[in-house]
Amino acid sequence: MAQATFGAGCFWGVEYFFRQVPGVTDAVCGYMGGNDKYTDYQSVKTGVTGHAEVVQVTFDESVVSFDELLTVFWQNHNPTSLNQQGGDMGTQYRSVVFFHDAQQKQQAQASKLALMRSGRWGQRHIVTEIVPLQTFHPAEEYHQNYLDKNNLPTCHLFYG
Image: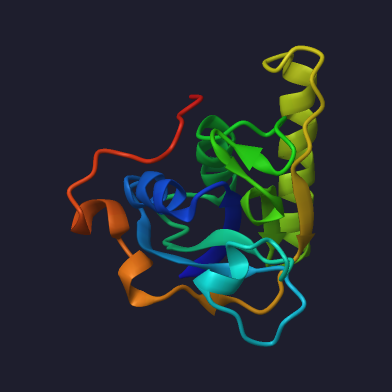
């Protein structure tokens, strides 16, 4: 199994759309990219910790590739919106790929470049960060599988 970590706004929606992908065996909401050794939702939501809400995806590479996960990532959020997705504003909602190795870094950069060249977003700049993996802090249990637990259709704006 391989892992990938993405931030694309509220992690509830991000977790949900990755859980729909065949070959994804797990998707865990959490926090990454901040300065604290330990953090929690109450701290992250203030925007002062530097963490992003992320989803760490575990996937079977014989079923789905990292490139295919990148396609899902790009299709399900607005990568031109700096520190905001829909009504969620702040650096904790930034668009980011935390790469796990050099190959993921190269693939994410190539995918971002292809998206920019595609013209899909017109003249708008793709602001998605592509940065090295940092410490992953799993979110509190009540955040995991939140939409299903609460019988909600979505909390996320879909751009696909």
